[in-house]
Amino acid sequence: MFGRFHAIALNTFRVAVRSNVLYAILFFAVLLILSSMVFGELSLYEQERVIKDLGILIITLFGALVAVYTGVSLLYKEIDKKTIYTIISKPIERWHFLVGKYLGILITMAVEVGIMAILFLLLLVFKQIEITQTLLQALLLIYVETAVVAAIATLFSSFSTPFLSGMMTAALFLLGNLHETMAHFAAKHPEQWVRSILDIAKFLLPDLSLFNLSTEVTYNIAISWGYVAQASAHGGFYIVLMLAAAAAIFRARDFI
Amino acid sequence: MSESSAQAKSEAVISIRKLSKTFSLGFRRKRVEAVSDCSFDVYRGEIFGLVGPNGAGKTTTIKCLMGLIAPTAGEIKVFGQPVPSRESRRRIGYLPEISYYYDYLKPEEILDFYGRLYGLGSAERKRQVDWLLERVGLADARAKPLRKFSKGMLQRIGLAQALIANPDIVILDEPQSGLDPLGRKEVADIIHELKQQGKTIFFSSHILPDVERVCDRVAVMINGALVDIGPLASLLNPRTLVNEIATSHVDVELVEQWQLRFSGLKVLKHSEGNTFLLPGECSLQSFLVTLVEAKVSIDSVSPRRESLEDVFVRQALAGQEAKQRDSKANAVPL
Image (cartoon, rainbow over all chains, first blue to last red; front, side, top):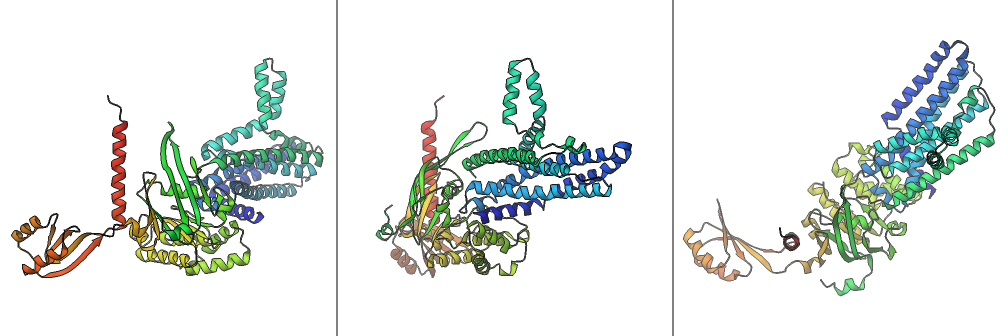
């Protein structure tokens, strides 16, 4: 069974690396990471803080962008171009195909986020800024966050068009990052029905703010590996949930 | 249509019972019945052809068989295994009607990929890839990416991927479409070769002469329903439909006299003479004697029997008439 996942994942990665859109996204990300050096210079005494803040923000946003793009386009392409016919007619389960595709997306994300992270670390070395454990933990959690976003995108693309899937995934990414704000708002709002809606939303949405360690990186606050594991487990749980829902939808689909 | 006793004794490797598929299309979820109450068996080692006009339900039937579409009703079994299931697909090789492949891959890479999906080991994959590329005539193009392939070459790759795991059943949806006459002959040769290896071949085609050339049994589908099934010989009318007699020029008055004597006689005039089309019911012998007595030189006599195309057209017209009758009967008076 592993051989089948491996074949589909590798093929997905091969398709992804041929996408000009991904190179364009990476190019802009690299440009912005380098430009954070300029912003750092302009900020006089806050150089280190600005470079770290901007670096983390750019990697998070562009990582999410790549996750949305690959998540919504790669599965849809297989269906649209009908390459899926010759794959799911082989002795594999449909969920094998879906998980294989998702693993391929994860490899693509690892390369994309990895390139951005390495460039960011090189920039820090060049600027003689200390690379702390918190910073490495933050980069790791950004990758987990992109994996969650890619799983959400995969779920939507199992039944919707790339445009709609992209919109819905982006909306969930934003709301997921506002999880903490929603919790505060829900606790203080006077109306019961608003509190109820926010509570339901809080329950359904992934808490992506768990993966955001930018404040801790900026102020060099130590984070335990236990926290990283807990946040990753939360992400992992959400990924399994999303992929299970996508597999159920995919299983019932007719490929006309 | 009754099955021959030999077929009745052989094992049904594909068994389709009361298969129906209704699609709900568009915003208003309009219901379209693509396949209606179809039942048939495909026996081990035979070449089974499914023919019918566009929209008859052939591809839908095949997609149900491959588990790409869930039937609305009915049951399909492959080697006794229910469809859809991995077990049912393990022994099948499938070439879709419209198939696209990863165009950046080379033939050996794409075949290796499909081999992995079947769970073949690396040595077996290599052996199969080499053999199949040779067999479908793509050995010289193994280093070329698929985006540089012609439609015919892609169809060969499709055929090769269907055969990568040496399946017991090969399902080919329009395998000869897009191929030139030589390519079609090669596909027909491969189909015969597969039959000699003991494989069962189930294929659909619009190219009826090719179906006639290779199939042991044929099923005709019209408007989603199976209207005829059986060995080719039992489907085709063995009687002569018409005799074509090519002669030298004949006087118009004589032709008019003969047309009164031989009911339904038609004549085609051309620069080198005439061609008489004598209905099968009329006596060929009497007509030839008449020609000899009139001192007309006879160039050739060709009896024409019913072809699969004639059966197909006959059934299609009957289907259209039935549909029109139904729609009139169901029409609401204003």
